[in-house]
Image 1 (cartoon, rainbow, N blue to C red):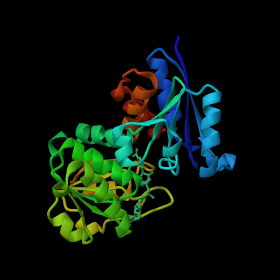
Image 2: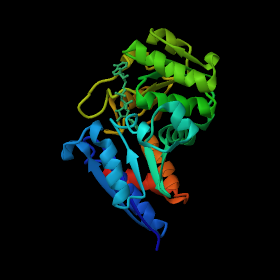
Image 3: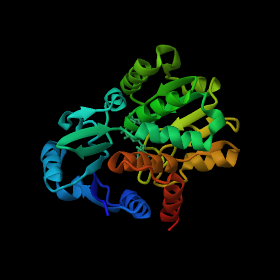
Image 4: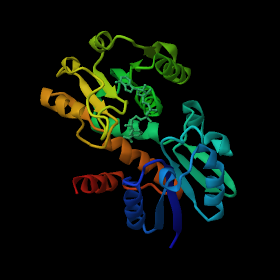
Length: 282
Ligand code: NAD
């Protein structure tokens, strides 16, 4: 039986569902797959320790690592090869150790794209307002534009971050499909979809990044936050009759993509989604 040793590196990740998701799917695929949490907060490690951490993971026989907040950018200089998309995004969430080399991949953007297309296939060409231009925002923007979104207007409380995100997106998809917005109400007038890619709405950050009156019934609304799955924004949007894309789909689909990179096998995404729903309902 082929075996894999994998891990997740990040801060405050002890509640992550990724180990359970990956290990169950591995077993379903006939693989012996062990997935460990490597929580930098618990271990008292920071970004400066990342080089040692990767060295040791390699020496101890890990086949790959997922990388999450706050190390997705810091890991870049430690890798031997980056996929074009990871280089354009400036972020890696999946490192594969293969033949003495470290390969950097990004499955956040493709995961968002897949989850979005599965949920709202007829909305892939819409005009979208993206609120939040951090790591998740850039990944969502790539996912949307890659699916064929006509236009993405990026808004962030920090205008420099919105600008930097728009520049990255435009580099790959063209200036005419991306803009920075500063007036949310005006930007939404011209849009069919709204995505929250800020942490507002997650456990410990209650509230909404979008004023309630702007959530029109004819908008579709997507949230990347998935702790909880039913954020205030998702709840309000459902109540208004909007079509919604909650954050769980992205979380599962980025794991689907990582599983493919780690094992070379295509997992059953529907089965992983059902497992995720079981885990979050428990
Ligand atoms: P980040 O800190 O890099 O970026 C967040 C951005 O939101 C910042 O630029 C900040 O200025 C902006 N912001 C915060 N409050 C705002 C407001 N009220 N209005 C406008 N802009 C505001 O964080 P990140 O890594 O991009 O993560 C964001 C969220 O996405 C987190 O909750 C994270 O858990 C979630 N996430 C989900 C998935 C998934 O698979 N579903 C994947 C990655 C991240």
